[in-house]
Image (cartoon, rainbow, N blue to C red):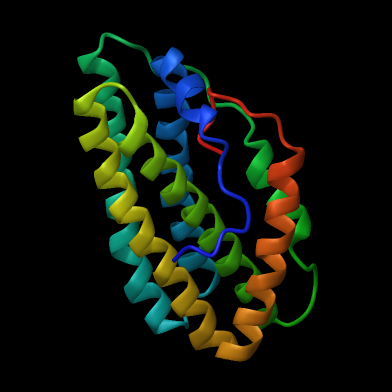
Length: 193
């Protein structure tokens, strides 16, 4: 369903569960950045009514996810650590086409958001299936379902504003690029991506 060309190495779950404070910290900041990205899109493209209507509730949902992860940290007597650079997202941003029309820039932003949500969904699925603790399996299952919906929404918005053919053609380019990126990146259990 997600179209990702290269699945996450299954050993990632084992690495992630070795230090829950680190993965939960990174997860919290990913949710915060997702809310911020949606706010930014609304600010940059307020005339796109369908985009504003679609993203406004996502801002609230992502911020709620941030609070859920904070609550999970607190429940476990763990602390929210410092935010770190997200090498995965920074590499995706390098692939964005620069310049072009306003519509072209919107397409690039929507596809980057879709890809981040797709990879997050895939990783949450792995955690929901393979992390040792049953309570965390349920916790991550909820995030997986949510991210799948967000991924679809960003793809649908891209098709709406760029046309299906153009959006899906560029999406395939992103998927190929992301697969190469995943091959090169170190497998780290302290990062969601």
